[in-house]
Amino acid sequence: MGTTTNVLISGASREMAGIGKGFLEHYLRRPHHTVIAALRDITSPNAKALLELPAGKGSRVILVKIEATSTTDSFDAVNKLEAQGITKLDVIIANAAIVGNQGPVESIDPKAVADVYVINAAGPALLFMGLKSLLERAENPKWMAMSSAVASIEDYQKYMFFKMFPYNASKAALNHFTKTIHAEYENIIAFAVSPGFVETEMGKNAVKAYKMENPPFSDLDEVAKKIIERATLPYAYPLPATLNRGLVPILVRKSLMRKASTLRRSNGSPELVCVSVLGRGRARALFTTELPHLVQDIASK
Image 1 (cartoon, rainbow, N blue to C red):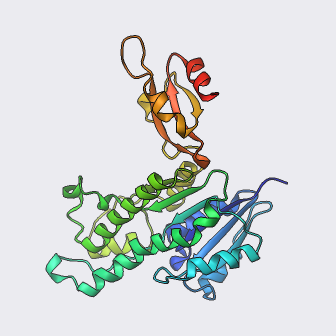
Image 2: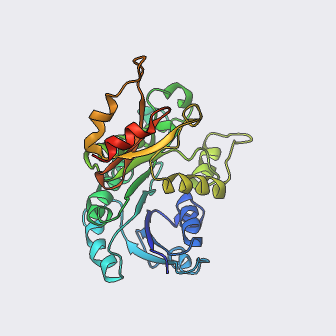
Image 3: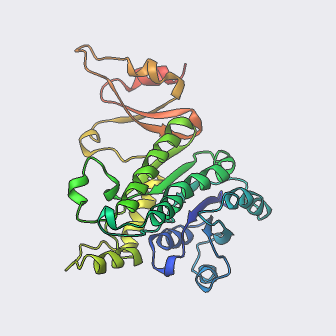
């Protein structure tokens, strides 16, 4: 019997056609996975339908009530999950979100702005705070936040056509929070993902709102598969193609990072390239082109 991987996904049943449900289906088809759907209403027909989805060997679905605006649900969920044998969370996917009001700034209802921020930005923060104790018990814990390209401040002009600043800004706040987790909790890999323009309920609503012809939809199943593959990597981000030739992955403890990063080749160029944090605060992924034995020696000290 293999070790069970526990994955919690918020917003996993949105009209049974959202990307959260896509994640749930992919994980559930894998063997020895417990997939926890964190939902605002675990008694709804959509929620109960998740329990009937095909599952891999030794895999199952658990429903737990976590409403995005609740300051207590995620904390209460810990005891409920432990009662069902969940002693750790390997992956948390913060997926629940709403779009809210759309249009020019002057037309947006101030209360609607607050509502979007509470669900899209404060909601994930509450989710993390409540479940952090379970996440930190995992061997290689990951926090993955579902963001959007429209959250980019640098690329704002590319997406200014989409006049939904409450949503855009709330996702920018989510990105900042996610980066903060990555910086403050050295044992947790935290990263945000933009799934692109996916054919979900939210995507279809955007097409209607902006009267888009021939929208460049990506396939929901394929997007969910690719994102899960990324979340399964031992580091947060795949290597760029330009760094992927002739490089040897080496693991070193984070405490050795400064020492390792000062190494230089004889010509003075950096010998090592840092990629990302690895689990339990004990490692980072470093890559060397010529002297893997040198890095191995450092890692062993």
